[in-house]
Length: 351
Image (cartoon, rainbow, N blue to C red; front, side):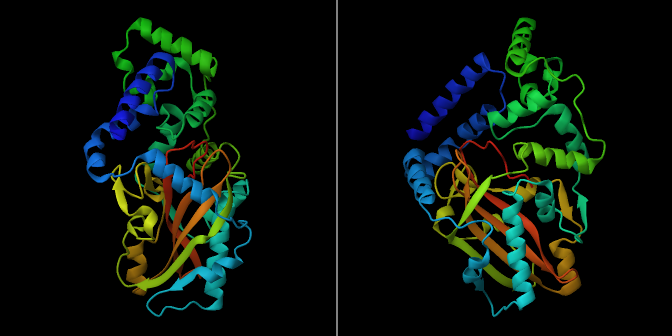
């Protein structure tokens, strides 16, 4: 019954938004997901979202959080599997990389973000269709993670005369009458202003990518976005393998994410796992398979932690997979997975 209520509320809120708002992006995908997953959720769920979510998030909030600049305690949570041992240089490099990850989403500078995301000496390339997507972001918009993020995009790049080309609107606007289109245009101007005739679009792809990262950060380069980590919930599993590793988002890290919900591994309804790397525009030139072919094995560190975030957002589980690259003698991030909670998402951990 709670799920049915959620679906009905979704329908009601969707209609309200269509009638009163120029923000259609958020409810269409949520509504579709709610309806299509209704039966599965009824079959597999035994507890309502609000009760379990509030209990778990409350427990997360009560954790003692360590400063993101204090990475020394992480030495105590290194777990070696299969007889693997790291030398001192490898261990120092591992902690340095974890520290760079923390700074990327807290320090509030382009250099801190890029030092982690595009570390020096690691060759990379665009994924297929990345260049098209980098351009389309400035022209067609995208599906956003919050109304706040969508509003910022509309004010910065949008124009009421181009509304039919924006992805959130293109899903339904062809069904609107001229009178309804005029009303949408009026409400757009009321919400976002007269619009930007020629939005400033960086010429080079890498600069476009940086601009999208900047926009996703709340236009603050993630300044203060992450505020601490819970050592109690931190674990680093270090192991070596001579075969392709299973995806990080399928790796078992404890009781929080055992069941299935919304088609994702989850601890309870509406908390799932989002593999951010699967939507990345960038990939390393040396894949897992390339490294295996060159060296015969992969030395991996899978990191699980609980990150405290600036209010009003909740603490959030985070996972990252680091691979030690012998060619450059450093750990490189290959997969980044975020615990996905339906909360504010005023900023987004762009990857």
